[in-house]
Every structure is written in C-alpha cells, then in structure tokens.
Image (tube, rainbow, N blue to C red; front, side, top):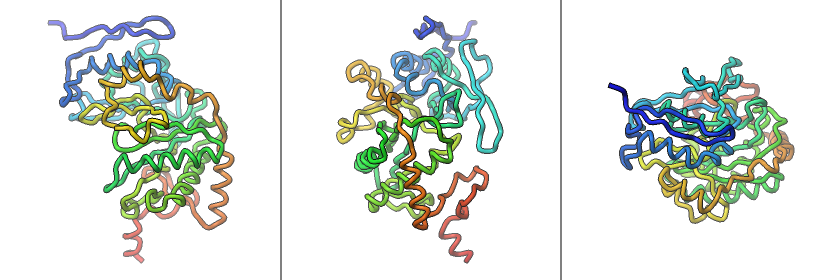
Length: 340
C-alpha cells in the first residue's frame, strides 16, 4: 500500500516546481492541530518574504521528525537526497573545520526542508559567497526571569536610537518567543570578530543608558531581572531563528518582522503560522528594504576601542569555542570567588 503523500506546486524564480510532502497529515503542533502540510503551505504563502530574509545564506535546519514535542536535532550538512535545485556552500566553523551548509535560493528549497521535517530555520548573518564577512549586525534582546516581552520593547526602542547615532538603520522582529531581534544592515567588509566587538560596543552603550533594565553580563547569576543583550549571537556559527521562521512552541508562533511604529502595541503571541500569511497580504513586509542601505561598523569599533582604553575587557565566548585572545576566565563569578 502506497504511503500517504501529496505533491505541492511551488512558484519561484525559475518557474513552478513540484515538491513531494510525505506524511502530510502528521501533526507537528498538537495544540492548534497544525500539520506538516499546513507548515509547507505556510512556507508557500510567505515564500517571497521568507527567501528575501533568509535566502543566499548558509542555513542550519532545526528538525523535528515527530513534531515539536518529540526529539529534535540540528542539521548543518545538506540532508541526503536533495533535489538538483538545492545547493550548498562550504563554511568555516570556529574549530577551523570546513563543511557544506544548505543555501535557500527559492521557496521550493524551504518547502523541501519542511519535507525533511524542518520547523525552525537558522540563517547565518553573511552571504553564501562571502560567508566570513557578515552583512548584518544582529542583537538578541533576551528577557531574563522576572521580565517579559513588554520589558524588551523600551530596550529595543533605545537600541534603535543608539544604532542611529552610529550611522546604522535598525530593523526589528519578534524572536517568536519572549524576546526581540534587532538587525542593522552593514557592508560585508569585516569578519565575525570585528562584528562581535561592534555588537558588544553598542550593547554596552545601551546598558549604560538603561542600567536597571539592560545587562551585558554573560553569567546568569549576574543578570538579575533585566534584558540580556546577547552579544555572543554575533559569533561565527551562532544564529537566530530567521524572519518568518516558525518556532517550536505550542501555539506555532513565527519570528515576525515589525514596523517600529507597531512595536509598542505588539503581541508576539498573535504572530503565528495561521495569521502571518494574511498579515503579509494586508500590511506587507516591514523588512522588504532591509538590505538597501548598509552602513559600516567603523563608529562602533571606535566605541569598542574607547571602552578598552577605559579598562573594559573582552567578554566571554561560548563554551564550545576555542580559548580566544584576551578572554576572561570561563568560570562563574561565584565559583571563582570560592576558589580564591
């Protein structure tokens, strides 16, 4: 007996492609009853905006073969059996290893990734052919225990002002959970460590302006009830859920681009797989012009040097990174004090 499957027509820059979806009735999100086919249809509906935001970039796939409540894994290598229209690009990881990663060039590639049980798409901040030099400066405003989305809003608004002072144009989206992601397009002429330092510089400036609301403290025990400006998301091979990417949470939310004028009244729970396609039709894509006027991080690197001269140091790197020059000890402050 043949297994259940449907063939989905997907329009794109090279005409219509047919993508086979097996097990289309498999429920991925039990609470709203959203199926694998529903997810594929969502990607078709938002396809142009999705590719504009996430295309031409190395991308990691967060895959859930049994739905969001089952086991999951990240796929960095292109899954086997990829159609001939799916390409990959070789990237260098922090370990100095090189490996191919999937690149999305058209909606059909993203729909095929759904066929491979992808729920969350994690694009790099750099382009496929220049993967060592980011063309996006990204800042993750992450609410800590005792804070929530509403606490991230004033931090994002102030961050927009700080970036403007540095000559950068900011764009904002929901994380799909409780936080906010602020992006600024930049010229792809600096490598990841420079961009990380620029992110640290702007995050420190935001912290100075909102010391009771924002923190750059890497160690959770020091963050308190503040919004954490997660500078380590700017490192090589560190990614955020892409714009219009679903998230593996019960109500099927989407990481949704917003106009700045919408932010203060935004409810992140209202942006879901079921609602975002209609929003795109009526509101349009707030990120449609994101890459039109890239700036430079020169001003922010000047701030970084200023802070170093004032006695501020390099900040910790992710625990799986090799030890980096100037990095402080990778030990919780409370444990360091006990050992002393």
